[in-house]
Image (cartoon, rainbow, N blue to C red; front, side):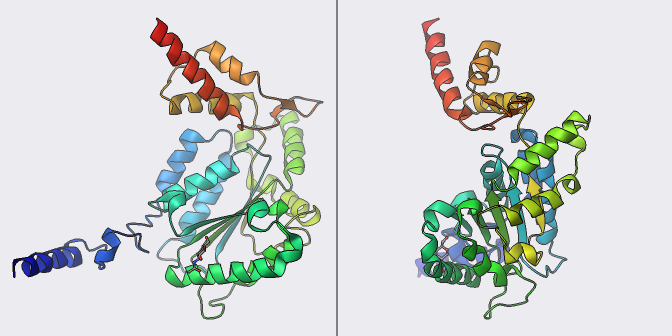
Length: 323
Ligand SMILES: *[C@@H]1O[C@H](CO)[C@@H](O)[C@H](O)[C@H]1NC(C)=O
């Protein structure tokens, strides 16, 4: 009798006090509700401001996401963002922040999916198998929750047939095969167009443009054209031809000050708030600069910095102990 009373009280508590959740299951497992999918774009803006260097154009992606999930707006199609830039310019880094801000469990959420070209779709001849599998995954997941995040990394190394397979799902359609995809978000990551982005940025920079004043419109057409013509997943893609990508977001090449920012951030992450100049310089020394004519940009962006900093921090603590 007593346990029945406890269960009843617990049930009433869950049902009426915790208005966010009508299902006690959600206390122990991830659910498709506001609590587990907070969609916190303010947090995202904050993370980008604090942790990402030199990529102010990415804020456009956040505004697009906020608008897409605005409860007073019915999106006519899934939101499709395409991130373009050199390795190390922060595309994956930013995607992780997006997952972390929109979902309570971030990249570990069952509503967040990462597909990596060379891992998930390695053999071009097998594209029919991939297409079917992908279709059933997307459909299966969408049936369970409409707010899914699908990230496709290495689009440049993904067979173009894959993009064409998801085209019906990211199109202007209320339903595909009985499933409504309009609330979902797709993010494509690639190096495609990065040579054009870098060249164009260098040109603008030489003309005296201030990086922070540049707008998406300085790059959009350029990326679209580059993506369409370069080999890889976007090559002559129907997705581009039919304008299904809502925003092309360029990740600009990293200059000295941005790399220094990344280095400070990595030290801070390891509880070293004030690295010495010589430590910072030691990390800067491993960076390679290009292109040959100007040596303006880090050719690996902020990649490889993390492991170098780890090494120095270990050294730093050891020296401190010796003191
Ligand atoms: C959801 O997507 C994942 C891949 O991220 C897949 O493994 C899983 O089977 C899908 N779930 C359903 C119900 O289709």
